[in-house]
Amino acid sequence: MPSLLQLFFPIFFLIITSCQAQKSFRPSALVLPVTKDVKTLQYVTTITQRTPPVLVKLVVDLGGQFVWIDCQSSYISSSYRPARCGSSQCKIANAHSFCSTCNNIPSPICSNNTCELSPQNGVTEFITGGDVTMDVLSLKSTNGYKPGVSVSVPQFIFACTRSFLLEGLAEGTKGIAAFGRTRIALPTQLAAAFSLHRKFAMCLSPSMEAPGAIFFGDGPYSFFPGSDVSKSLTYTKLINNPKSTNGVALRGEPSFEYFIGVTSVTINGKQLPLNSSLLSIGKNGVGGTKLSTVAPYSILETSVYKALTETFIREAVSRNITRVASVAPFGACFSSKSIVSIRGRLQVPSIDLVLQSKSVTWPIYPTNSLVKVSDDVMCLGFIDGNSVEDVDNKPRASIVLGGYQLENNFIQFDLATSRVGFTSMPYEFTAGCANFRSSV
Ligand SMILES: *[C@@H]1O[C@H](CO)[C@@H](O)[C@H](O)[C@H]1NC(C)=O
Ligand SMILES: *[C@@H]1O[C@H](CO)[C@@H](O)[C@H](O)[C@H]1NC(C)=O
Ligand SMILES: *[C@@H]1O[C@H](CO)[C@@H](O)[C@H](O)[C@H]1NC(C)=O
Image 1 (cartoon, rainbow, N blue to C red):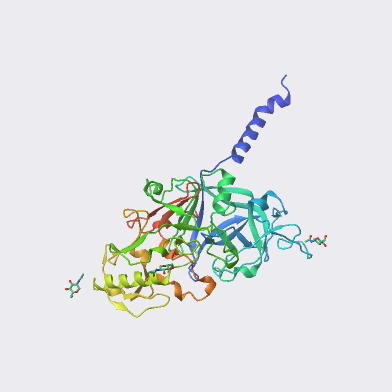
Image 2 (cartoon, rainbow, N blue to C red):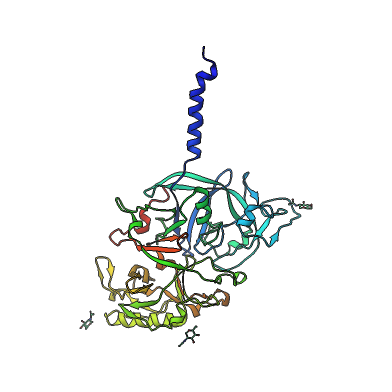
């Protein structure tokens, strides 16, 4: 007679192995949806966090150092854990300097012996203290064609901070989703948790309703049937900036932001007369070209701005495009009626950022260069760095490529090889970045 155990063993075995299979499901990539906030023009993503799980909206900061979240207002979670001073999490977070003490009722913003970071609001540049904290974070896996099952990181490291730091961020958001080159920003932490390639890719949608996508891990990235954008990328090196350019308190540390090597700028193929030393990064960290998702429009050092607008205006006027009064914050505006459109493409001067050689350019298409400010007026969507009032907010990069110029471009950041791949989403498919149904 077989024993009960022998009878049931195969069933037991099946149950156990299927559980293990589920547990060890290793996604090849992950995806987050990104929408644009109408009021602030910030890009907002949604993660799932805590136990029981809640949806948390965060502002996307490409150059952000680590995720930080408001833990002061209604942070309720049974899986929340502060990182003890000296723990491996504090080391990974590079949080060595401060150890918290708090004599109030223990809460996510009040604990003893917890290592601390200095969360910064990438928009206002306010900076404060925050406890290094761990909690479960979930997001969708993807095969590159559509979102799949949700996967979780049980102890995702972030900084817990106070509500006032949210000032200036899009309504309903609870903090910053950081994508900078650090060990605890989303790309590296997620890559480590799921053994993904240390790559992430961003495709920002200009639409408030139809989200774009941010991918973690390698391609395929398919926005249209039978297509894989990762096959049509142009590559350029990421440039290291030895000095951080955002945040007063952080200046002096190496930058964890993303810089690329623009060597010249052309309009209709004509090279702008630029002081070339502005295009490279000086010893003090000033200069160069950085990518930013918190600047709604590109910000240019004042002499670069003047050269760009003057040349653009001259080329536009020679095409019989009529200049009209400027509409702040822009300095070069045109009558929409005077701009010809052929099959949906505006016939305006073409702007190209020239990279490592003349044949490698980052084209800024009309949809990324001109901003419709009213029914009758379109403006060149670049801002003079001198007009940015707060001295500490003045961009130290000569060219800050902002959100409007990045929209409907697919941009892959390869952290392991330190390069960026980019391509514009084809015009023929007007939904562009929103074609990946990231939020389904
Ligand atoms: C921190 O430690 C002090 C001294 O031991 C204690 O009085 C206080 O309640 C502790 N705070 C928390 C949040 O546990
Ligand atoms: C070019 O820019 C550098 C850095 O700002 C400055 O030191 C230099 O004087 C500029 N040269 C010219 C010719 O304007
Ligand atoms: C601009 O307008 C003038 C006068 O109407 C015309 O002769 C010329 O061909 C136009 N130029 C372009 C580029 O359309």
